[in-house]
Image 1: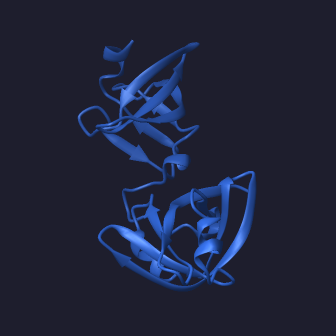
Image 2: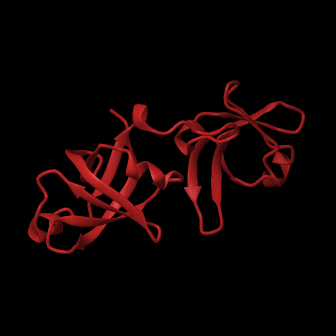
Length: 167
C-alpha cells in the first residue's frame, strides 16, 4: 500500500486533545472534510486516526481525533506524520500532477527524441528539480516553464527543448 504524506502533527493545543498540523499539500482545505488518516513516524508503521473535528487557521490545520481527549494523549502524536492512500488523494486540476506521477516519465528533447527518464524529483529551496537518467548519467533539470515546454500525462512524456544544455 502506497501512502502519501499530507501533514505533520506539530504539537498539542489546550488540554482536550487538539493538535496543530502543518499541511504539506496544495489542498489544505481537504483537512476540513477528510474523516481519517494513517499516522506514524514513517509510512512503514502507521495507525488509523479518525477525525472528530477540524479547522484551518493561519496556514495550519487544527484537529481533534477520536480517542485523543487529553493533553497527554495529544503529546504522544507530536512529530507523527499524517498519510493517506493514493485513492484518497484529491484530483489534480488540468495541467497539474502529483510528483510521484512523474517518476518513470520519458523526457523528450526539442526534436522529440527520447533523451531519458525521470528517476527522482528533488526538492530545492526555489523549486523542484527533475533527476533524469540519460545514457547512464544523472541529469538535473529545473522544474520550471523556462526549461519544460510540455508535460503530457496521458502519453507519459515531458518535452525539454533545451535538453542538450544540461549534458
